[in-house]
Length: 92
Image (cartoon, rainbow, N blue to C red; front, side):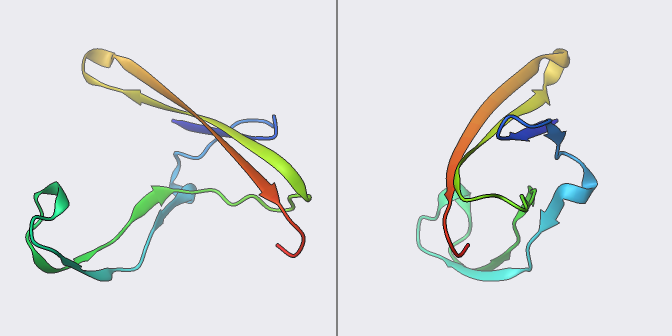
C-alpha cells in the first residue's frame, strides 16, 4: 500500500494498476566496475514506478505526506513514512 495525501486531503492508495507507469526502453553504457554487479559495456533498461499527477495546484507552498506499507516474511509489517515539500510558482 502507498497512501498519498496532498495538503492534508484524503489519502489515496496509489499502489494500484492505474497509477503504475513504465518508461520507454533506453540505452546505457556501464563503465568498468559498475554498480549492482552489472556487466561493463552497453545495455538497455526501463524504469517502473507508481506515480500520481496533482492537478489544479494554486501558487504557494504545498506538502505531500505519504506512507508505504510492506508486509514481509512471517507477516511482519514495515511502514515507511515520507514527506515532500514543494512550491508552485507563476507560469508552471
